[in-house]
Length: 415
Ligand SMILES: [Zn+2]
Image (tube, rainbow, N blue to C red; front, side):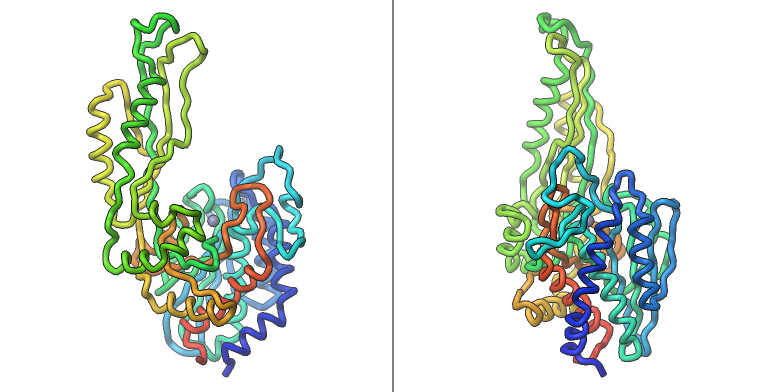
């Protein structure tokens, strides 16, 4: 029987190959939009073939393939699902990067490039987990399924959402995901976005004739302040989540910036876009803005919408439409998988990650919404969506080891 120490030594032995895989993965551009991931997918499938691992693609859209692989172990047991995405944020071509965004360059102990943090390092950790556990399947129990999806960055319907709806084998007993979290936190839930578009319409007029028309832009400005005033309150989380959040407050601030722990249980509002007016000397007849509300775990959409409706009652010139909503979802912060991850992170690098809720959204919600516990553990979100995105090589290897060892524990590997 293989011990965890031996498994860790196998990963150390393959260090260069694991690093090289991530560099090559980054060098295969997969910006979304437009979201064509075929080149990056080919890097994954070539690796899976080289190691004799089972896989197939599920491609509701030809340019956005999802890689799906599954195998059973020697004994009956639980079914673990690994999830990561292949598509990444686009690059602003006017920005100067220290290392070209698709270079996958190694410098200063880091791997550089667009998407290396969000989330090619984490997806690589999923692929490595699939690879090592497949080699040990004769010693393990249960089943392991790998899902590498396209169409995550735009919350699109053809990635994980498609798999969860159409491929029953992705619905296991537990999910691991390598989205950026920082090695200090394990994410067991996330806030829910509610995106709304507000449009103000007024007659408009010459800019000096302010007695003739209400201004759409000034009305929008007032409305935004009133909407902000109905957010900000905190919600008590259900069950034992509050206990975990209290323990993880410091880690949450460290991973997501000072103030994160305080924000996570509050309703928040961001006005992402605003458009109005044609010319400086005209009173605008229309103004529209997109509002990104985030609901905390335990928060309710109906509650928020009724507050918004009472504000809108004072604004007869405004209409509202819903653009997107996903239910807040969290799973058990004291689940056995969390225990395995905490124990393995400590054994590998002396780090003691805390379970926390995430501010941003991820595909993990799709499983949580179906009652399947899903946990995120990945590198620090360094340069995510910005220039000079990079991952520390030792941190990447730490994440790989924690996932491999925790999956090994979950599928009944020798202790
Ligand atoms: Zn991501």
